[in-house]
Image (tube, rainbow, N blue to C red):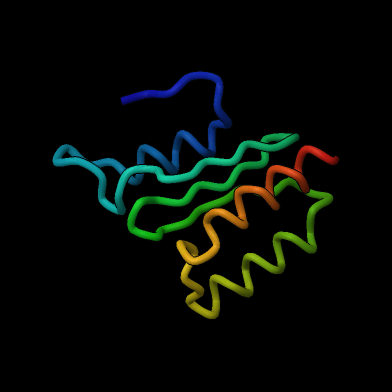
Length: 91
């Protein structure tokens, strides 16, 4: 399966989540696209991945800290969607 008009790194992540038998970490549950190729994706089973461009270091540091703490991304899916969309579109 291939997608069009999305950042290359997002497509690479989606392809890595796929296998011949189906989704390895669940299908995408939420995808947020932002300015300058920024994106965030959350799978149905709670896996998360993102690409944050230069200039958004504080956001990148926060997400890296959450990942290090084994944060449950699914707990903030709705809040993150609104926050990421507002933050990245404001740039």
